[in-house]
Amino acid sequence: MKILFDTNIILDVLLNRKPFVELSANLVSSVENKTIEGYLCATTITTLDYLISTSRNRETAKIEIQKLLTLFQIADVNSTVLSMAINSGFTDFEDAVQYFSGKCSNVDGLVSRNTKDYKKVVLPIYTPDELWSIIYTHT
Image 1 (tube, helix red, strand yellow):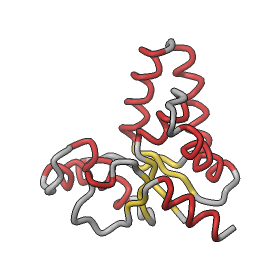
Image 2: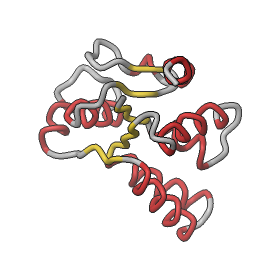
Image 3: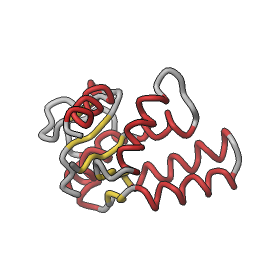
Image 4: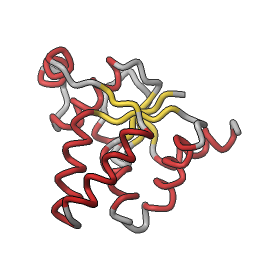
C-alpha cells in the first residue's frame, strides 16, 4: 500500500506534538518496517527543513531530512502537478499540490489529520486512526 503522508503527520513526530505524536510515529514505523510504502511530497521536504531549522537548528534539520530521504519515496512536484493544483477546487494550494503529487505518483491514498481539506477527490484520504486500523488489521 503506497501512502502519501501529509506534512503535519511528519511534523507530529519530528516536533513531538502531543497528542498526535504516538499514532503518527506508529505510521512512520509502518514505513520503516515496510508494512506500507511511504511517500512525501517534494514540497514537504522544504517545509520541514524550514520549520525544523527555525524551531531547533540547521544541523538538526539536515539530519532529519536525510533520514526522511532514506525512508520515504518523494512524490514529484512538476509543472503538471502545479497546473492541476492551481486549477483544482482546493481552497488550500499546499494541500492541492500534495494531493496531485501523490495522484501523479500513483499512491493508493493520503494520510492527514485535516481530511476536510480534501473534498471531492478520487484518492482515499485517511485519518491517522483510519490508516492505523487498516494496517493493524492486515498485519
